Length: 177
Image 1: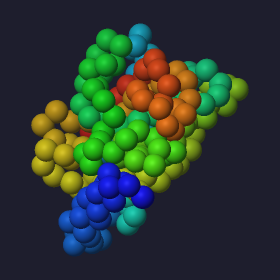
Image 2 (image 1 turned 30 degrees about the vertical axis):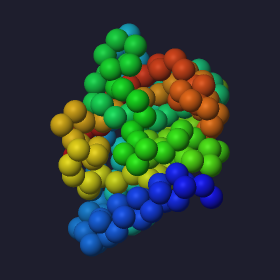
Image 3 (image 1 turned 135 degrees about the vertical axis):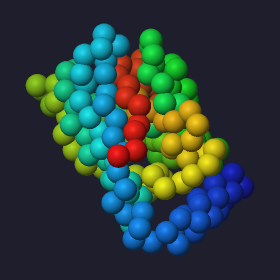
């Protein structure tokens, strides 16, 4: 393990410890993003629920090309134009992109969405790197919010920018419920 990996791990432990005292009161807190394609058509929803060991994401998406698509939490709650308004991948700990990167992953990195032959994708995934309770400048609900961004291609879980999954094809602002 190199220094950056150790520092990122320690920072994650500190963040986890900061929220551990919230106990069961944070479990069950929810947020939702309604994703839209650039033409304004509905791409589906992603619901996030605080769990004991992270955030459970339930997605129900449609209108996709069959196959894998990258999905990330982004640092800005704006979905305008080509969705670059959503900024970069949510990364409060300064990690590198990707599950396969020894200095990663970023908190906003998520597993690829796999669309069926009819263009739908329905699944649940757990992200141990997210939480819905964090307040302040590094939280998902800070002053400029956060967004979920869906990509045309699969994330390769390693390279920057965004795992080679570009372009961004759908976006939804994350809203606390």
